[in-house]
Length: 80
Length: 459
Image (cartoon, rainbow over all chains, first blue to last red; front, side):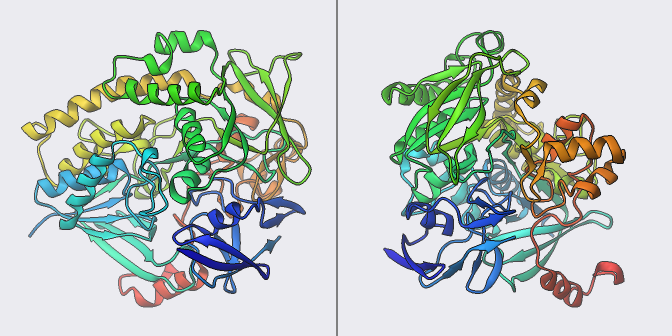
């Protein structure tokens, strides 16, 4: 089943059950965070490195590789 | 009253421990961060996972079936383990990194620590570019999400785990350009007697590795040995890598550089055991940073057992055998029981396999591929130059940490700790962590308010 989430306002389609990182990667995005001015995306993929964190429905620092995407989730990029 | 055995981690070791403890009549509680049991080895999703990527799935289904008689807390992160007055585990249950997860406090007669390991990826210039991940990330994305990391991926590092990663990427539609193994032909011949997948002394393993080798051949993916990715290129994401021959100490050999175009790199130079719960529980840790266990998988702390990668990197089969012994002993079982003969024999066999894995141990010459601008600590963007300057000036381990912030970021040194220590040639004590997992301050405060047993200094 298809789910719809938004990333910085853009609609992104994913498959039900995928992680937020999985949905974003499948949509062709490689990075969704800025660290010291440089782009970052998924790195460890198993919840250890904290590199892939995003803001989900207003809550910051959520690991995209671990959180299952839910229909309607609003994802925002984080900058530090 | 039944003996309560709490098991941290539901990968092969934890699941085998649960099954064995249940067989001995214990009241079993299994806690895992994931939404589903299985750990990294059996990471899956019911509809997204391609079953061909799974191994020993029937075994997993049997182990999962046994859990019907246990209490399973999935999506639960343990943040503290107390062993001063009996075993007490503090955890939070709820969606990953949500704001108001439910606190759990669980008392136990015995604890089995089966928290596994995560990939160790050595820093290399350019490794923070999007498109560079650990080998485990590539594997997890393929298995769990059905997503290929990139269109053209270079898989690089050391050890037989690179082979299933390459096979998984190919299975979900990614092209693996090369598999690059740092151990050289001489080391591999000495360590394995022949190619790893031909290593015949271990039942089961030879066949599994052989499948991966066939997958490489089918996809015409070259398997390069004695080579390493020494630089990753790209502006805003990966565009290519430099691959070089390395000597027996993993020092890159000048003049052997090759450029390979790719849009993804999966790095895996071995594994780092997740030993922080064992450290907090007071368990003795070996000089090479594994949990020390006896023949019953007992740690130095009474009532605390450990199994799987936290006790030494040996793969899923070793973890299954060790887990069974640990669970049975934790439940009060006698290891001389006839039911333990199988696991004890399997453990012996798999430890012989694990000894061969040392062929692929990181050799100290790798730091020669770093340059001054290479980021070591990804969380705080700390470069080689800043670290070496601070080590010269600040002296103490604490001084280096505070001056550079290396290892003090969000991952708490899990990603860079051992590499920073290798670069500076000294331990920095980065794996001692007062809080075992990501917890929001508000959740911690709520735990202090609600838990009647919490002492006044808990906040």
